[in-house]
Length: 285
Image (cartoon, rainbow, N blue to C red; front, side, top):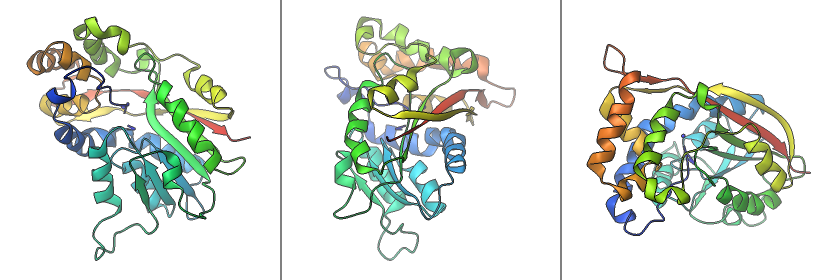
């Protein structure tokens, strides 16, 4: 569920002050981000990402998708202006101290627009990814359109652009938990309420960006947690519940999300929610 599972929505007055963004970024990096690894790997395998790839990650978050691509030999760059805290963790992963031999040569991470990640006189990107899934909140694709408009000119003709989205709600167990956010944030629903993913969400974004669809796929990405506390921290790290926290309080959100998770708790105390995510490959004409 990010850039990133979803973009953080902290537009309400006083909301940012009620959320520890540093702790949330760490929970995202340590708990939640890995849930989308099957999506990253499926896309990279299909597109044969390797040493010849020059990848630009939009909404790169704490950089796990970039790290996986770099491990395949790709030169990676990432941008994320929504969460400086997550980007700082990405820098720890991809740009460690100079003496550390794990440093990824040529990696660029920018808290700004895509053009800032291109580099002077650098060759065009051969792949652009936007792995933050859309189709969960009303209007959650609006910012993506702006990012694509800036990124597309930086890639070569015919280069693939990958978009990601939630699968149908009947195949996403987490959908029932996400509805809690809408219920608690009812007074704020006009600014970001849950909605089921639609079949053509990704195609519509690609069309608005002037891209040509060239294949798609579905990937199982179950959300698995060691226990209820881990599940709660992971889900809250997505930012989907921040409006609910603003409308009520942290304790109320914690209580209701925990209750919504109980059907997915197994006998050993772990939490397991099967989900399906969809990706679209579009080409730059």
